[in-house]
Amino acid sequence: MAAYPIIFNAEIESADIRFDRGFILTCWVHLKWDGSGQGFGGYVLGGSPFDDALCAKHDAQANFAADFIGGVLTVAGVESFKDLPGRIVRVGKADDGWGGEILAIGHPTKERWYEPKERLAALRIEEAA
Image 1 (tube, rainbow, N blue to C red):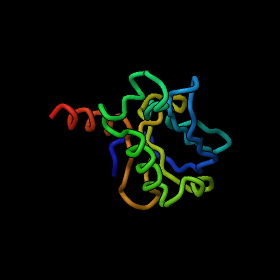
Image 2 (image 1 turned 90 degrees about the vertical axis):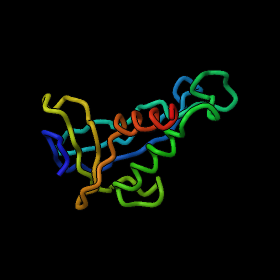
Image 3 (image 1 turned 60 degrees about the horizontal axis):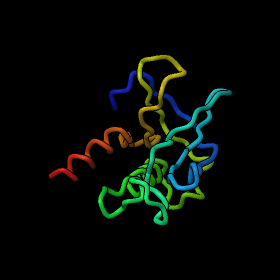
Image 4 (image 1 turned 135 degrees about the vertical axis):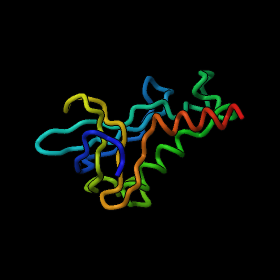
């Protein structure tokens, strides 16, 4: 079992890949549980190839977009982004109450978790090597 103090099941209500501020590629997975809900994501996954921002320099950085999207699809047990709504995932949160950050989402029956901050750190280590 993963080492998250708070673990519970949630349903993916919706999922969205979009450009924020017109050039920052981001992804959100909106989860619902027990009459409540919260978003998972919001990381800078890249940028518009037509923009000069650092996030758009895809040749100089690891592909976090593929990592994040692939991680979410895998733990949700689907092969297509459009199939995410309605899927059940486990939610791992820190021990800071129900309003705290979602640290990871996991497969509902397998011991498979996707934790973006851990993956970001791993990608940065690989880049520096």
